Image (cartoon, rainbow, N blue to C red; front, side, top):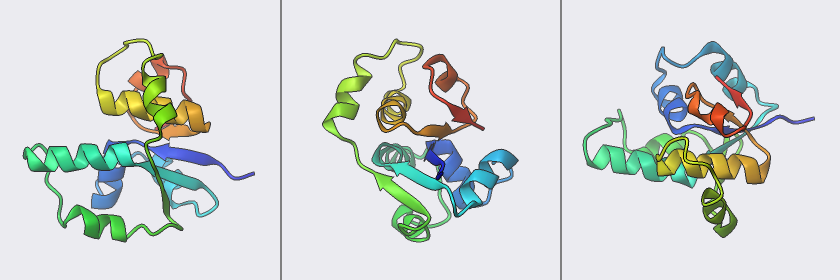
Length: 129
């Protein structure tokens, strides 16, 4: 059975940069070609915003970085209407709209989240990190 994961924004950034902050378990899941890894459009949106306000710097343009991970590595997860509507049913453990959307996507698509952010645990999603 194929394991299916949604990669958190920070994990994707660390992975793309080859950053030492990437936990070994996350690296193992991301490098296992038998796993199905999803990258949310919400994460791309978050990265674009953070780069534009200078809260994040990348070593290459985001399109170049994304090009390194073709559909065999990471599958792009679009933001669907049901995902956005599901955010309204989530408790307010915190107010980060990107994390809330990732939670809704993980729940709706039955995905485990790869993240070091323990806030996801409060929403009852499965997390590896």
